[in-house]
Image 1: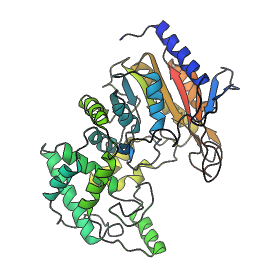
Image 2 (image 1 turned 90 degrees about the vertical axis):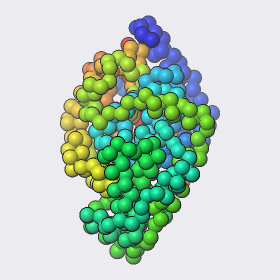
Image 3 (image 1 turned 135 degrees about the vertical axis):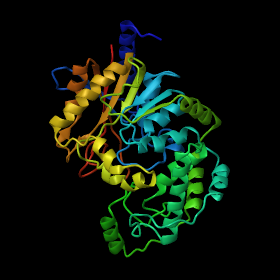
Length: 415
């Protein structure tokens, strides 16, 4: 449906009216204030989504660094879109926005320069039953060779052989084009279970959330913890994780996921140049961009890339790791220009940013002029203020000592 400027303005007014009258889960009203900026933008502060709201779908339980809670995209998808609208994430990561959009009956576009994002996201639109996964695993050999790289600090020799055998099976099926939804699901779960911090992973204890440190770093962890890799039954763990992921799905969820997955579009482009997306077709973008050099996506995912037959070094060169504000602004400015092109009139962008470098940088101050320069109207800033049971601090104040300390969402509209 073609949006007119009048309809766009009505959506903007409705957006502000909703936030002004919103009461958070504890019954407290949202705090509304004008910012000190010359543009006189509005900042809304409150508890918009918390653990006290509806439990997020079990399907989201895929460990990945620098991912936001599913309640965040759900809030904006419910507020700003209707069924079958297109929801997009240019920095897809583990697929939180994409999966939540699918669960809510929206159409899905997702992009990430790292092809691991699609490997972790697409299979979850077609969740199999645990029995079918177990039957498929039963025909996959467990005996294999040792890996071509030294993985002895992560795995028991028998576990490593199972991983190598599973990797060979999956890569051969993919290469000859005979892999199906169950194979891709198994690959997704296995990729997620490679390393972690509990007995539910294939590896000995390593750093959460499922990031693979270097071999030398893992050797240091092993020495410090006096640990030796013990055998883990990879097939049993895959079935167990499958049961966990699908445990909360309803028949309506599965129907919505299948429908969304049937025409979902996955891209591995630079977010500044997404030629596969037709202009003015996206109703809502919900995303969280790379935060300067806080997260080392390349180093974190080297083992996952190996398992999936991907060239981690080549992928790493395509992932933007801006180390200065100026460089980051240059990249994000081009991203906003592309988002403006693909956003439909009356559409919105929810751009989640945070304080980085020990709270000395507030990226929303850089984001706002970038979006406006691209042609968007800035509707304001939403700050989700959340109380923590152990520290009594609020989200965005003192919950961490370094890294990403707050979550702020700058909301733009295309008039």
